[in-house]
Image (tube, rainbow, N blue to C red; front, side, top):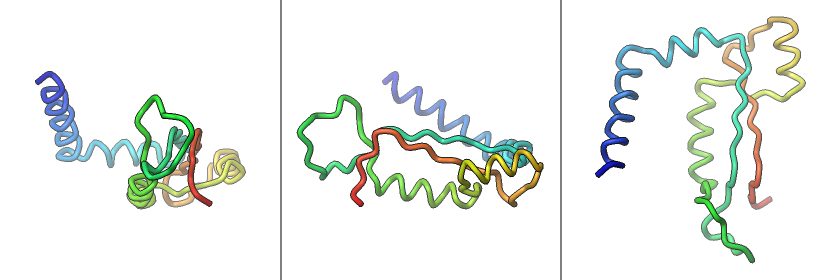
Length: 108
């Protein structure tokens, strides 16, 4: 019951953000900045391992879907490009996004 109330509140806040375009406003205001996204524990549930993860793992298929959505709003950049962007005040069209990955067990 408590989780349902929390989820309902989160959904209501997300709806208000969407309704009033708050997300677009924030994105506009940070257009000359670089965002760091740190992702932890990516591993397919089908991957065989000798250890049992303590926390839930993010499935690579869900990560791929989320990255497709993020690519509509962000320009994935390297650290070198981000430093150049910030030093020259250049804007690459979309807000720069650097993705950091920790404990990611992805097949090569």
